Length: 309
Length: 318
Image 1 (cartoon, one colour):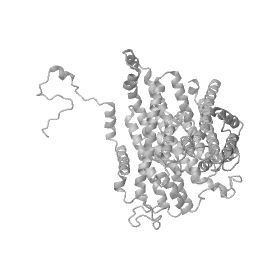
Image 2 (cartoon, chains in turn blue, purple):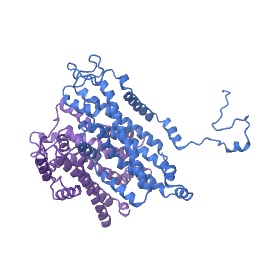
Image 3 (cartoon, rainbow over the protein chains, first blue to last red):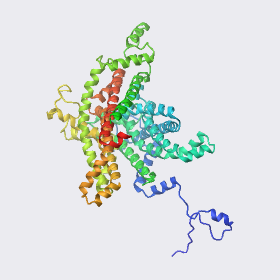
Image 4 (cartoon, each protein chain N blue to C red):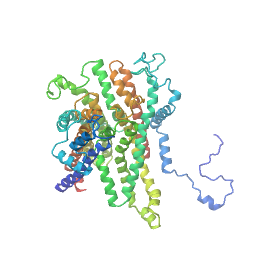
């Protein structure tokens, strides 16, 4: 066999001159932290890694859209409308105004991903904060926050999104606002539950007894316990958000033309359903692939973060 | 039990009031003046004042809300700006059509979803489980309006066996379920609508069944010599309250979340009415439809909670 000496991580080389007490302090086996063990578990989950790579590819394609898109996504052509795959160098054909389908799909990823991620991010921060405050503060604040959230919870998600952006009018910003409002109550509930679970534990009591302020307790002792569940829930919302956002655009409530957006493309191409069924299906495939990849990655991360599993 | 029922109903009232506040404030979310759509651009200040007074927009907001709520409680949602018809009539006609879709989509998704989930939960890790789990993820990741379009391409454009949209020549008034010439219009929208609930219910059932199967009493049942069929019956019975809760929620979504599918199939239900209201910026219709759908959602949740308490005594005591 090979003669190489394998030194375990954290082990002390025999010839080093270190005082005895320091040797005693060094751990024999390196203990993994929680997040490290999550990563370790994910390393052997080839499904999650695979779908994660697809998500990464979609994100990179969206960011680098100007570099990889073969054509200008806004360039119209009267003669080249609804052409099939491979027509005059357009790999996936053209849309109803003669714009290159592939370029529009690549650029569309930018808006669709933004509309998928931004509301979840906003809802996580706002809902998470409200939830921690509601869970940690006393009865009045808790009741006020949670009962308000219950009201928004009483709407089916798509209905609330349609109601708010329907009243405020279309546009990307309004779409993001309405979707953020849709996700905030659920996020708030998750954070509130997690906060309430640790709030009355002994170590919080001990921290308070030793003079820690409420803010310090929240920052050091509560947030660590809340972030896990909040992160898991947020990751599962991304695919929902992408679906809802493209749904809003499909109804004419999200992104406005001529912006390339998958949901909006689906809605405009719908008029040409009988002429070019395949082209009409393309934006839907983009939405579906993105959404299912986010879903599967979220499932994988949830599994890896589940300590019982 | 009676105490629980009363408590649960009392809990629903403030929620319903809160829902009405949200619906009422939709008017103020709209950019500009809510009267812009009815007034000609060259209206004089005098005309504007008269119209404002007629619609009650010149009073303080809480008073406006109180008046609005009073009318709503009497079944008066105001008049549609676009059609000048009473909103109540439009909403109820549309709700009946949505309910028709939901009443077909619900059993379809409950049976298929529960069956798939139970099958997967009983054979965890096996090929059946993988297929079902995969299909369920596809179900919840599919944009259902796109699935609707694809189904239209396949069955209406290519195969020409089913109609693409609408309710048929007779319209909603003379729609007869037992005539295939009318009922065929239901097939594609119902299938499309059922897709997401099937995925969600299959996932929930699988998780619930797998969880119950790992409990000690199942081992006891096996040790007592029960056959696999009898064990599965016990497992399904214990998993059912959890699944029922999700089914109820999904029924609420079928009623309240059908706007995309109804728009794709131009099905004249509440979702399509909402879509038209948005296009026309018809705020009274928007308000009335959303209020009606949200209240149905609240009522569905209430009924499901009560049903659960009937089935599962542990909930009553909590």
